[in-house]
Length: 547
Image 1: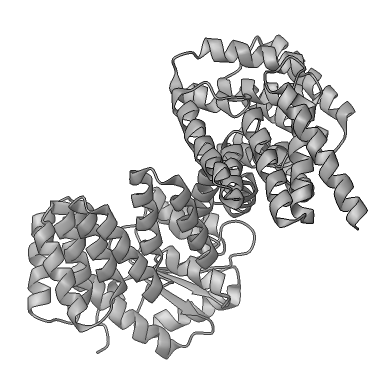
Image 2: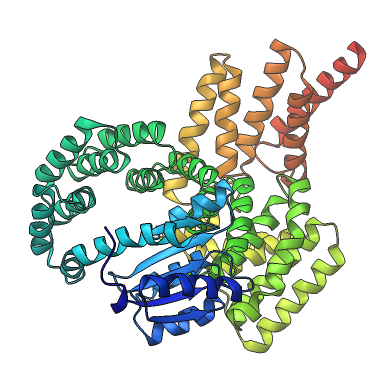
């Protein structure tokens, strides 16, 4: 049935091509729409939306230079410019899975693929505008926090089995949970699932379990949802939220990795994955996700200054773990640093931090002279401005001292920071990663538990499990000499028992080389280190003779 209210609508068409704007304008005029504005780019669309309230917005995804259509929608919602009753339709000629997933992820009212015809557009608009008119009282009630009124209106539509009963059923479940009526929500979701497997109802059941404190039950529902409906992104988002509540950071990272594999253009998930991976000391994953987040952040309302610095920081750190990948990312990281002030404004402390990170990248690339110059430039800037560095910037200074072979100055600074932040557990946890052994209570306990588990496996001659434990400890605390020596010993015993593999020998070499570069003759583990060095040489000689 054709919609009767087209004459009353105020419409906006956004596309960078004049011909498309004119074509769609003509289509809307044929339907009866008289008030039509057009915009050729995202900035113009936002300006118009701030000045006038539109009932209908048809926006192309690719708008040329500047914001995409998806970013326009995100901006409108972020700044609460878009009226809850407005209909936003995203249009695109692109059909790649990542683009389509990104479009659905941003949840426009409809997604249309080009080319479009008057008939196909009107068929969609007839349904969307009729739903909008019918449910406007519900949207208004929700927007005004009158949830009890919204519930009554939704119940009425569901009971009448009206045209929009299914849509109201979804909203009703959310409203019940918002009001704390978990029993009513569960009854609604179970009834919906009696007929067929519905992604929204399965996630709703997970919300019910979560509201009752049954996080295991919630995870089971979500795992089932992901298996049956792998493109339903809300399932991944709720999984991630529950992992955060449980403090399960490793599992959180796996959920986010799976989510960005399905929908790689979602900036917020890439940012969260990067931050989570960095907390888990998985620098490779962190640097990769930060790089994607920086690229996705161009023109996005969700772009953040700290993400840009963190990408460069992760790249600098990556040189110690994967020099080949670090060199690939270095160019983008350095450009990110050079563009930082223009993009986010001048801040002396951030400039100092950026210079220090740039110095570390230069050192990683083998340009120690440039690294020294950047360090001196930073010190001059601090002296001129009389600036006291934040903890994060001070840690970058310590890393830069190490990168420029100033180990004594790095050690003195870390000792000073440890003393200055004594008793401040969160600060000490940040400092821990640069120390040989952690000083925070939480991390001392953590490394002891992982290390002891590894020793237990080693004593049972379960060398692979022992190596996995020591690797886990070193991901979190890479400078821990005791754990490094435990790893080397487990690898050497595995070689003795199972035979030499090139990867194991290379890993022993890298592990012992790190200790060679950092251990002092008066260290309590120095004698053991020498013994493992001798054993390693014996194994290498044996392999050479055998070959």
